[in-house]
Length: 414
Image (tube, rainbow, N blue to C red; front, side, top):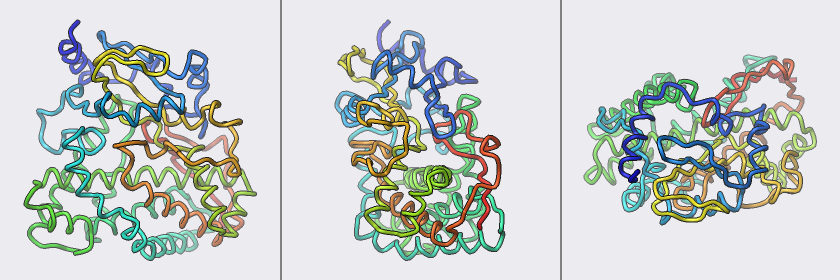
């Protein structure tokens, strides 16, 4: 079947699907923070396995670190623009998928250059005081509601949400409405219907906020006001609102999961908790890098579509085939780590794929690291005797999601 016909048939199948087939769910599932056994078993077949075959289009899963890095870096052989396969581009602007993760050059470069100035080393250094303030406020809130609190709500959510709202320059009056629209962005239990509906609400909220900024700028140093001032003549409200949505998406949900899951891991490793209490920058950096590898809340990268027939690992991928990179699997590759199932900051290595790699690497990766370092050190120093306040078996983790997380994490402050 010609590639064009396969894509048309696939678009119809994907847009009408109501659930993710059980046979291909395992890259989006976890056992706590560990990969499910099925993902590890797939390694026996190789670093690249066929995950599914949908109406003549093969879907490949990559779990090996080296192959994953190669695929993520190769924007010549692979396209990120999968919008033609989703079949929702005839809907209202806020309901359409897109953003940096699903655009190719030259559109990707055109959009990314708008955001890059806000994430330079100099700009990030200026944010440290704001991050300290947000973290301090979250810790005070925990203390006020103790001695037992839900760390997900009081800390995991509060820190990245506060930081990202400050970064965007969002008025206080809009923050609670914004928060209500932030859930269910990555839940795939209904094949993503919740994602489209909730995402549309969030994007429309930000599109409207851009329009408001054009009339009356709120915070001159905030990303929203700066984007409108610097690029308002070249980009419409939908494009700027979509970029703001990407900042929110990459800077809030993933960091919230990382803080909560990371704390859960650290409570099981008191020696690393003590490292955070001491606060030595080099040791803290090692703990953070190992957490990114070990927890890696973003389970899969944006899917890639092969532009031509080529070899991926030891497999032949045809033009039009879809390649999905398991970031979880790459982080647990035994060819790269002697004991990948063990959390060990002393063996932390540079080159994590937790933020992606290549052209589409997360633009806010260094901001996320700053948040993790600041928040986890402050948490350990403020509450050195922090302890889990429930049976670990009672913890509920996401069942099927692109971004993995824990729903509640009851803790005693000590």
